[in-house]
Length: 417
Image (cartoon, rainbow, N blue to C red):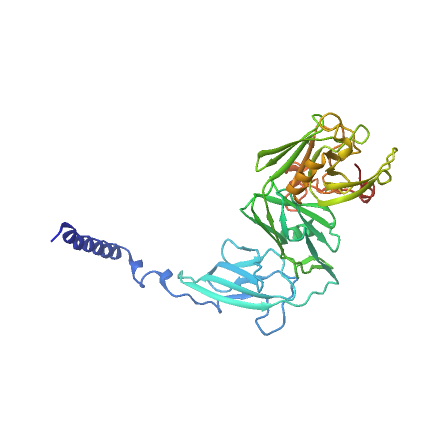
């Protein structure tokens, strides 16, 4: 008989003796003597709550949910959620005597409440409660529209939320913002920023991860926002990101350097805005690949006349700043700034640029004599705010958003070359 065959029984016997010894010293190995080993009892007679039971009058969604311990035991845990999976936040008293919700209930919803208790002997109890809330009595509904449309974008693409009603009160903004959920895989830190009373933007601390999936949804439906307003429906949104593409234009050196995943892939001689039409400094996000665009001096109020059909046009501001082909200025590209604000390059380079960028990619201008890109109102200037400053625009974190006024928006100019 081999050595292995002899040693195997000894191992089994040793383990068996160890288990017996442990069970002999700890009564929890059996079902007697430890109240936690008992099956949970029905705690129906131990607790009460301030909502009608299933099949009776519906609960008032404007009142917080409260669960009370009516005996000598205590509540150990409460979870409450509606049929769509939205959980209700709450607080449990230190002595376990009561629990109350701290987040608003939704109107016209069905809730399930699971309560865990202990009696005076430490035995566990359980009770599942169900109830429905009534229809909303408010006459305003706040709908949310997320943007951009579903698709694949560059790592600089902000998420937008357009509201159907203005929300000015800070506490009401907090209710709205808390219900707007953004998640990404891989995960990254991010925050909402109130641009104005009807628009929010969401961006990460840094750019989105490459090859990420981003999911956006609202838990606002039926939730009370104010005395006369409740949340409405919102279609969820799923986006993905591509490679990290960043184009940096040094206006003083008259050169654009294009990076892909942090590696230089092309250096392009360019011309930017001449004095009086200087290209804006700062970080911009590609808004659209518009291809062939007609640009005229009248569109920007230029004193010198031009009327051009421009190819391979990539828009980066609402006011008409593009990266595009400019065959008429090839002699100046790499040497002088002669445009009316756009970034011009040869037709060959513009065709390459047009082919290799997408919406959401980053276009950054440095060392220009122009003004800085505004954070909002002229495209996506979101990345020109430092992270600390960005977070001040959140109703959940602190600060007051500083967005453009209607007059600011009206001053935006159409397009330049």
